[in-house]
Amino acid sequence: MSRKVVLIVVDGLGRAVLERALAEGHAPTIARLVDRGTLHPPCASSFPSLTPVCLSAIATGRHPDGSFIPGLTWYRRGEGRFVEYGSSFGATLVEGTLESINDSILNLNHLHLSQQVRTLFETVEDAGLVAGAINFYVFRGRTRHPLARRPLGALARRIGFTDAVYGPSRFFFGELFQSDMTGAPANIGLGGGNDRHAAAVGRWLVARDGFDFLLFYLPEVDMASHRSGPDGVLDVLGRADEAIAELVSPCGGVDGFLERYAVVLVADHGQSAVTATADLREALHGLRLFTSSRASDPARSAVALAASNRAGMVYRLADAPPAATLARRLEELPGVDLVAFVDGPGYVVRRDGRELRFTRDADGAPDLRHGRWAVTGDTDVLELETTGGAVGSLRYPNPLERLTGLLDCVNAGEVVCSATTGYEFLDAGGSHHLGGGSHGSLLATDSTVPLVTAGFDGPVLLPDEPSITDIHGLVAGALGIAPAGAARAGPVEGRTVGR
Image 1 (tube, rainbow, N blue to C red):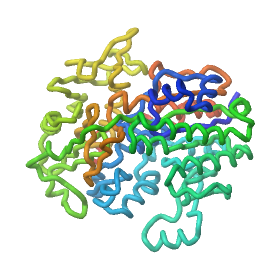
Image 2 (image 1 turned 135 degrees about the vertical axis):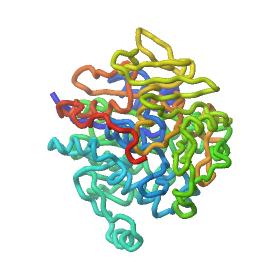
Image 3 (image 1 turned 60 degrees about the horizontal axis):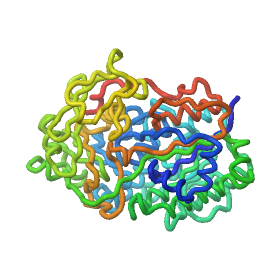
Image 4 (image 1 turned 120 degrees about the vertical axis):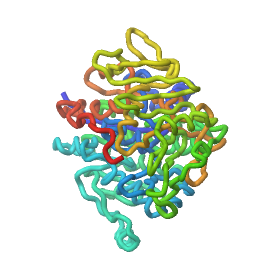
């Protein structure tokens, strides 16, 4: 029997932070969901553990190899420019503010996101059901939504910004797009307004039972963690919990809500405290570096560097050194934990002068998600251990699947790197979160998130190491859309496409 489903995504909520909040009584509504349901084993994010990548993984059920979204900033080979989804104000100025706004709203959903996969909203509404989204950045759907206010539309057309997007039929995105007049307070993204706005819209929709599937997105925990670090967000998490309480209030609370809806609560990534910064450009000294489409010519540049938060990618352009050479240069820079690249049919990871190689192999060792791998070299590079016959790592959750998920992405750099504990990479504008928090790395602190399910009619079956890519199939299955994985396209063939 199918159930209506509400998916709650709390941006930036690490598993350890939620556990502390539950223990200290800061999240009573979430605690009630846990009591009535299941807090599953730690769930792994995608890599890099950055918001556009991870929200795309939740929406499509695919890592970057399937979603085509490889980072918060990345080099678009066909256009010879950087895509910038909003690393910082300084970074947006490198390519241009209008370009960055268009990238983060229109292009992310309608140009960059792969057409070979369906989002949850497309999957749900293709089955004849009603989908809704509140403030979620990866929103591609089947219904055209013009800007909510006519003056905004006229201004948008004048300055070259989009005046409409395609999303689910019940669609709310700040003050820009509103499929219904709900009476919610204005949301300009300041002072906790995002979560308050989501709560009011969600309550309005629940009171009318106006959907079969709703994605309820709360970003304020992530914003607060960037400012204060992951240990300083319990009060903001408490307000997110209050937003969830408001969402369920038309049903009289959690118990009544679960009589009507199945609930999935998850985060996209965690965060780590930042105590030092590193400039990846130092490792590329002496090479002709592409800096922006306004200041550089790709034909005259050796490499392009896309760095943001705790992850970075290097793209080989004209007469670039081999990927292995670039990887070794990055590896020697303080703040870089590990580097990875493709070599022939397989993958290479290096850390502290040691090397591990791996490939997918149907006869290889299984991991905790039933993938199989042939692994050679130094397994300590990823601190791999075998438990119950399955290979895994506490330091780097789901490492082999996540690394291949990025390295096989047609929009990724040839060399990728992950920051070590405490470090953040300067972005194109030189910005950082020193003294606050950041994310993006392969490490567990950035990559381990909570996953709570409640209100399902039967047991929720997940791999021993859940992934945020499992959410798509979980929601589809609960809605009775069979088979649950039908929205997933097959593996993307040919990792050299577009390079």
